[in-house]
Image 1 (cartoon, helix red, strand yellow):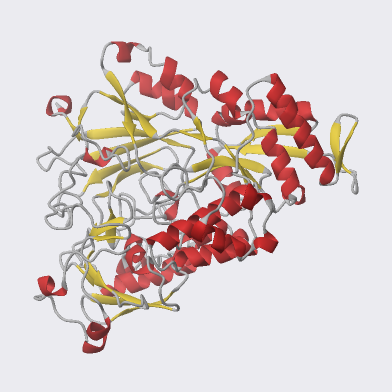
Image 2 (cartoon, one colour):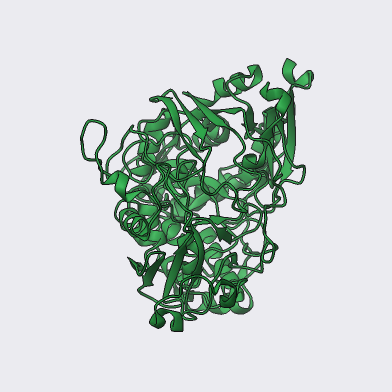
Length: 616
């Protein structure tokens, strides 16, 4: 549900819209939530976890994996440098977005480049109003033309935004401060809000020329430091080796509530490593890495014994989080014929012994993931009932009967007896799908092709995640192997869907909507760089995704998400791995922060600051 927290009268001094638009719109919105009224609705001066008096200064040193060759994260070509938008989504350190997604509340946004927006009851369009103080680092104002140009560029060159804003057909400047986004369908209730996630790029810079007089091209990668509007800009770089960002001293949005007491470091230094092992060694020594987000259960449990930690120079802490847990699992690429049969995918799930892996390699610290919307009210459970049941009954002839009568459960291993039973069930499924054992190897009855699987990874961590699984598949009669490639090749192969199986992590919000197209839709399955890693082409999934996007209210959205979750689980597109409902963070004792970090995101490093004595 949307939350109108600022009535139109409060902004009466702002220049009015043209009469035709004003009559159709339902009121101006500043802070907005898709779920409930924001706690910051009335008097928002700064986030609760931010210290508005935090000192500015100092440097934070961080690692990056692989290499980079581009400062343009919004196209398919090139590997963007650290500090740019992660995955091409958002603004990163360089660019501001139209609005700022809240750090400590789900599906809530606050003013940034756009100070307010409005839309009609039928959600057929949205109008965003610029903050007149918004400017680029060269002092030029951010204009409606920048926003229109950016929208057109992102829709043309970026797969994620193309799906995210699929129902936005145009953007037009209607006066000096207002931009109208028109939609091709009504009642896409989150669409007016999520337009605020769009970064804004400088049209005049990208359409200009570089120092050599060459015309710039937004469709190509570049190592010319771009003009930005955000809190940092590139200070220096060594291509593929390092990049240093420096804080913009006259950053136009420094005193906005979303930034007050945040963006405190004078500089970010990123140093690149070829794999994760030397990153850990660098952290233990200090100087190259100051903050370490731990992903290894074994290391968190037993390897913080190095001198700096014993001496108190390095601290570590668990930060609980209430946000949904991502679906981390083995994605099976159904663009390969051997994975197209659901019985094969289900058989492989019986060979994954999470319980043994958790006990032997993960120090018992992980929890098995059993939902694509893990944690909270969006996760399906039991058997379908009520509104969810009626939704699924529309597609009953296209769904397995067990979906309606049996709760979904991951296979359980952990001892020899259970694993033997799981292998027996896997063998039965493989035979039903047209495979038989020949000379100890599962072989396709029709083609004579032996069943083989290559698990693709981008770092040695893959050996921990997939090592035992690979061994168990070999014992079962599948020619399974792990292939580790360098980070740039790994990203390239994922973008082209050039893999049999790989570990994928898909993060969800508490308000699923338009982004679900990029996760699951048939259209996204054939689009390079989409997040439909398994190549799902399922008309039921497509229909449920569309229903989610146009859900009339929160209750309907929850029921539809339960239905989608259940359909995805029963089709065994992923073999779920594990999660932990907390963030593990270690740092050199040069930082200070408000103890009450945001539980929704776990931790907000941007709200930390460097102790004055450490700066000296």
